[in-house]
Length: 331
Image (cartoon, rainbow, N blue to C red; front, side, top):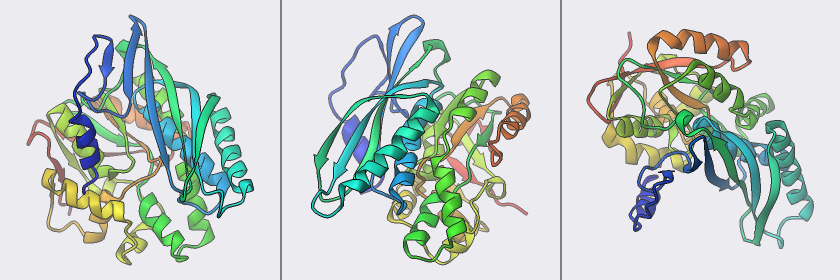
């Protein structure tokens, strides 16, 4: 089963139509959008997963940053959230859950989001995340289908969270490397979202479980354009190339390669470990922004001034082949 099979199963359900439904199952995006009035729409999303770090407090922070990211990617402001908790009461002390929730609340406070409730169940495996509601002006909504030929692509966070997290679990990564990847995943995409809205962009999505190639492929397909990526321009987390060469690739990364290989052209000289990084399933990754070429340097400068230091132009949007991502061969 590929990473898109579950989404396809959901999208194959009978469609519910409503003139106020802006983004739903018929137009898959980072979140659902429902128009309340001419100047107000709500954004709804949910995301939860199993721990990817050992520290409960840090896991709570990462899970919240990840869940809020969908709202930021669509140009919205997250307002309220509800906890989603699956907890193995027979095998873990309740103090673990308290630390997770404390980390989550602290990250929500940082984002200016109100926790209004939630739901918990007893499960054999620990999972945590959020259901989030945000708002956006309907005319300022950003989607993953507006990229235009001639645009530049900016990625705001480095890649490699899946590969490095796998190395951390295998006790092969040092504490400094583990701390850096945890900090990256726990960082909100709020600054990047605010700045891209000020500058004005054509499309945006966030890079998460489908990896850079998967999410870029969706952007290309939904926008009916081609996308070229320069692998040497893609920002990477420290030591990720080393761990990729050693084979620390999670199952999600391998599934991404299997599923999205049909929609990507990779130059022969792109090393195998770099390909793995480009397919790597990310947690709480950065925003992938498509904007007019003339605005790219301005946005990049402002992002870096605001502390989004790893932001980089990683490629460009072209007229074709439509729906295809090309990883270019470089000298």
